[in-house]
Length: 462
Image (cartoon, rainbow, N blue to C red; front, side):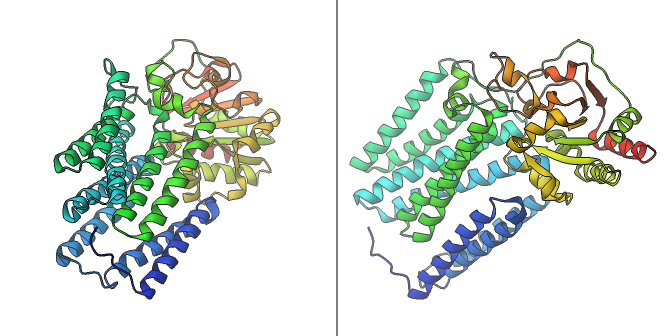
């Protein structure tokens, strides 16, 4: 390798401060109450780490070009983050994650071409960065396309897909070993291409309902790629930051898989054995009981305890503030109100927490699944707004269902159930919800925000 650059003491201390800020930010984001400050602390740490680089004594070539792209990237990121709808937040996370993995892979490629070193550790970490980064990039792009519904959300299984995926994986690992043993530039480009191909093959068989878990896994891979690039670039801060992302992403992936009640292997390879949770459009001609906003308002107004179950449909309708207004109105009437939050409600972990935080819903009213489930049997009315798979009893009773084994909210234990739905279209898993046909279930069809506004207006006169 080239001559090692030793950073001045003040630079090393600055990196240490940035690393501590990253740790504090990660800890703060473990709770909705401190998540906002955690994000700010993390941003300060990233700004410090980036700013110090320009004054660290390292000779930067093409400084104007670097600054130009820094400005362009900052503007694009700011505009995208401010304009993105809450419903599209998972897609944005997937894109940002993919950019991180792709950047790490490209940096490793450039460093290999510039340094031209035969140092064993340098080659090992370069190969690791290129493979992991390229897989994270192309895999994240496919998850974006699935979540944005620019391609089918159902599992895509190509002919002999299982064996082709295995073949590409073996070829990628073999190419990596070959590059380490006998460094050649063409091998590096081939390795990059194989990594990109494997990322696509890796995610295609994953069904829409499982995509959030894959996003978390790809996020962990991006972290590992960044950590490996820290060695390639001889940058301790990248090593620390990447390790934090990799470790937290791995833990989150494991927690999400448990929340879905499915082993990670079933999520990643279930399509090859028919056990994946995909999207669909199954419908039924069985009769259901529908009602008006006035009837729902009367039902709520005479209850002693009401539980609100928010889901992705709430985010689509941007009805969180209206739901908060309804909850406040019920509370004023002396009715006990809680929100039931499933770990994977929406399209990503914490989706509902963030959505309700926008409407200033008190954190004390947000109850996680394990805490709220015992309370459903003593609840007069459950109001489900846009949730489907996370309350579907098929997860408990139907072994053929793709969500079988997933822990759900025990909505069916309540005395009365009200569903706000646009139509009878099933959830992301593509299966019907038996609760909809339960005699104690009432459906209120229409846009969630419009329906809630009508219920609120009617409730004021109850």
